[in-house]
Length: 196
Image 1 (cartoon, rainbow, N blue to C red):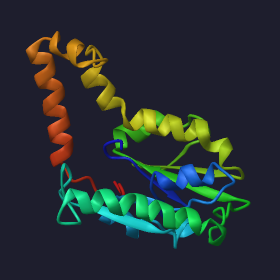
Image 2: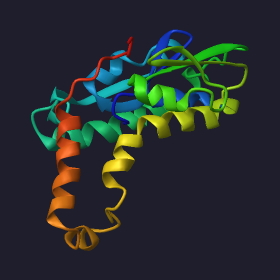
Image 3: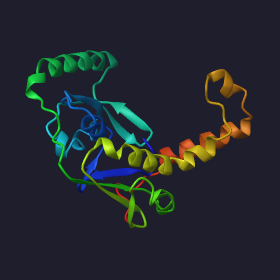
Image 4: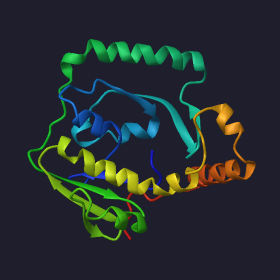
């Protein structure tokens, strides 16, 4: 998840499961995740089997859907087995011959990605790319993610997060800065689609 970033394919919002499915020629058998994710399995992923295991109370807080962890622990492999047994019922997602990919992010960040790898600025916060092959959009998608993640890179540029020991060696003020950024992100409610 990148703060403030949203993608749409031919006007339909897409989530991380869509690119993974569209990049392969095999069906997506099922998805496990937060309850809200189920309604986001739309468009080419509509009807994909889904198992909700948690629901958010806030962006950074979730509660289990089932009363106890043991029930969740049993539900996941049971769901996976059912999805695997029903693989013949699933088909690879349709890949349109021509499509429009859009990405929305804060305007300042969108401006930084405009013109790179085919992105055209449709509005201050929205970039648009017309394409024929999903694989051909990989660099453009990467450039959009990199632009949207720029604030994350800025705040953690001089921080060694390679291990707990490395983190313990960081100056307390540096760790506090990164922690503040993460907590602010977790508390912020970005719009589902930037329009300004």
